[in-house]
Amino acid sequence: MRTIFALVDCNNFYVSCERAFDPGLNSIPVVVLSNNDGCIIARSNEAKALGIAMGAPAFKHKEMFKRHGVQVFSSNYSLYGDMSARVMNALGRLVPDVEVYSIDEAFLLLNNLPENPREFALNISEKIFKWTGIPVSIGIGATKTLAKIANRFAKKHPEHSGVLDLINNPDFEMYLRQTDIEDIWGIGRKYSLLLKSYGVRNALDFMEQSRHWVESKMTVTGLQTLLEVQGMPCFNLEKTPVTNKSIISSRSFGKSVESLEELEEALACYVSRAAEKLRAQGSICSLLSVFVHTNRFRKDLPQYKNHQTMRMPYPTAYTPDLIRYARDILKKIYKFGYSYKKAGVMLSGIESSKRVQLTFFSPGPERRKKEKKIMKTMDMINGKWGSNTIHYAAAGLEKSGSWTMQRSMLSPRYTTCWKQVPVVLAN
DNA sequence: TCTGGGGTCCTAGGACCC
DNA sequence: TCTGGGGTCCTAGGACCC
Image (tube, rainbow, N blue to C red; front, side):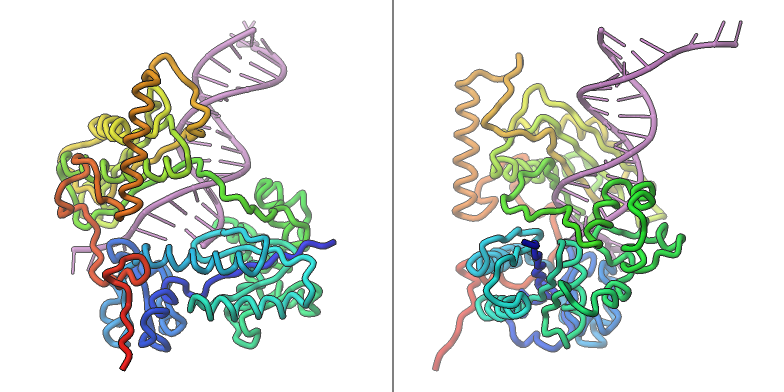
């Protein structure tokens, strides 16, 4: 029995989330910006048609936004996260084997279907739209990589009605020929330049290369991509969510920051968030890294960046300890006289909190128990009443420092905040 | 004035050990 | 002048992804 993979991808996901609650946005150009309203990270088809590039800095487009009546939104991650969960849950009701791959993508297995995979996929996409208001495209192939390729065509060409099945497709070679080398999943900018320099321009060219040659140029990961394009699965469906091996929390600042005190405050906030994620996956960590850097785009200002990692005396998920260590590192890498634009922390050396390797320095069982209880209580309160309901004073009492984010065009939290739930007036 | 955030995997090279 | 051969572990950096 042959495995059939499908990739479900939400169309222009963040834009579609905004549209789901504001139909006035349909058929006009819409973009969503990154944190601090910095870059453009999602575009409606109308915005794409205006030539607005993914990742372009928003400030360079202000004029054209105005000229073309582009609707601009700050990113609203509570809304997108919740809408994503709705889509994934809906998929789970329709198909037994679902792998949530990213906030807007899921892989499915479509083996042993009673009907034709394409018909089945069309039905999925219709139901998802009906239940959540989010339009999706579905690509079907013998491997994940081929399903990805199919998905691009399903999305780009309306004649497919949002679904393309590449299995036993008579035009298979044509689709591969029309797939640029850099559009293959796993082949990025660097490798596509290299491959093109050898005349390998599209997925069909790539498919015809020898395993040995591809491995010698692109290591085993490239070889896996080759086999996948040739129809041999190297990547399976991963149903169980993986625990992260590293957790990063970092932000660019709303305005640049000079003082050690403000950096400490921002870092304490990032550490709190990272530690929350760490505990949520039932982990503890033994390595803590801190980094800071100035604004690399300001060529007129002196530049500085640095990072340092420390191994803690014993693995922990206890926020106050992590804040303390982060502050120690910061003091070592902080230099007076620079305008800092970004800082962050990374937790690594992650292991399960259930199998704690005790060391000579570990606190006694009584204290560990107490720390665990405090964290559990804090996480529970913040989970119930909203994040940051209680937090450490080190993270700043007034969230008004110049480091806090700018989000001047934020839509309401339609689905995750009672005060902002949309109201329908009947009369 | 204004340029995101968060991950994974692989490899090479150094430190260290016997 | 000549200076072993393996093995492991760790880290930094590069490539990729969304």
